[in-house]
Length: 618
Image 1 (cartoon, rainbow, N blue to C red):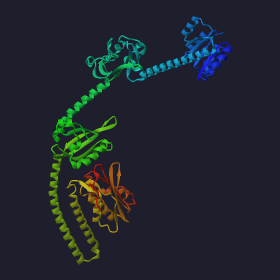
Image 2 (cartoon, one colour):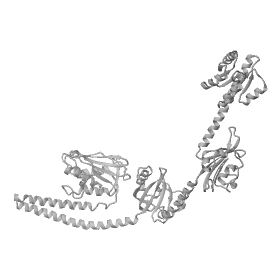
Image 3 (cartoon, rainbow, N blue to C red):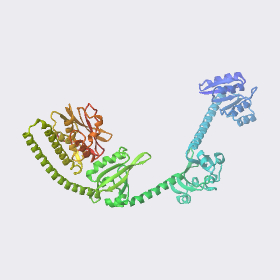
Image 4 (spheres, rainbow, N blue to C red):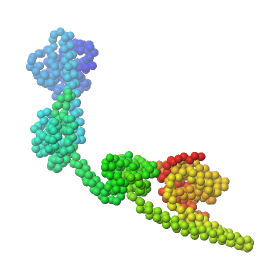
């Protein structure tokens, strides 16, 4: 429904017009006999249109129209009067009236015509408002664009010049709008000339005379240029120009956005130079330097990599993957380490020893030092150094050979000592039988204890001499505990092995001795122990094997000292040896039980040092 305001000094006309106009239900009409009163009514209520008589006392219709228009109100205004002089009509239209209708004639026809004029005037005004709103929104959008933007019409006259281009050039929109004859080129080139916005339909050969990095797709043109302007300093600008269309898809001009890429160009240049220096330096290194994406595809390798692995640069160009360069037996372990790194769970760096695989199928030992490649806070791959440790392994093997010889000599010596201890114990027993003197009983006991201690130390020396002698291997952890429990003198103590079947750890073969020591330690020192439990917990990528009992536990001040050499009531060597055996493959052990509630030993197996193997069949 349209709300109308009708002003006329004839009350009878107000009444008849209101009756006729409101009959259809399309219009609601407020009336007044005074133009001055009507001005107040316009403030209180919005109206779709004004109908006004011309000749009225105090303020006539045209004066009323002027008041309305000078207030900024663009409401449709229809002059409805009995005066039909041509000069009045022209005056009314010049002051902003939308239509003029002369009173008189058949009422029904006249009011039908009046309704038609009102509809037409309202629709036209709404269309004008929509267009103005659209133009204002377009202007606001252009003004808020972060890139410097301007537009010209088909005659080359500037029709838009946003705030960003004002800041870039120092030229305001007020100075530039409406200007033609290449005025927009002056802030950039210091003279009038065609620029990118004028070259949309030119060939790339012509564009290349002034621009670089040209990208021409259909009627969109993107290119770079370096200029001494704007504001008197050299800059590199990237422009994007395209035709400007109206809603009927007719070309009405062109638009160009300009971005200052000076810093980006400088940064890219510095990055390229830095990358070049990095590669030159990497090619001088005797170690392999590599970069790979998150799938393991190599994105960079130095010359040493080709020499060590036997591949060529053509192989690299065709595509190489790090999995091609690792021995099959190590693929699973490397995969675990690699995924942990690219998923951000492996820390900032990782070091591991593996067997590398050459193109010809031969293998050699390496140490790989790697760290994530982080771009904008996201891991995009890994980079690292691969060191050939063949010579080191040979030296270690030579050392092991020397140790074997030393161990042989030690075994011979230990064998002789054991024989002498046996003889000593025999003579002591004979002497004890011949001299059954109670006063000497303690001395016989002390001699026996000293002899047993020497024997234990000799046995420990035998075990310790084999630590690290054999290469670490994958071993079923549940089976290890079962084996250790069978070797220990448990008496009435029960060992509950709740470790899952099929879990393997990468450790020194003597790891079985670790579990034996823990069980034997509980049997020997634990008071009130009835049960020893062994189970596992997985937490944050590490595997924790727990061995705990229901005895009295370890005093707080003794928790770390129990791993010291010589600490304890027996030889004080078992737990120290256990820590040494585990440390070979970076496995750690600590005591975390609460005094009075039992001992609890936690063996922490790091990521990549455990896996699901073949389940043990019971």
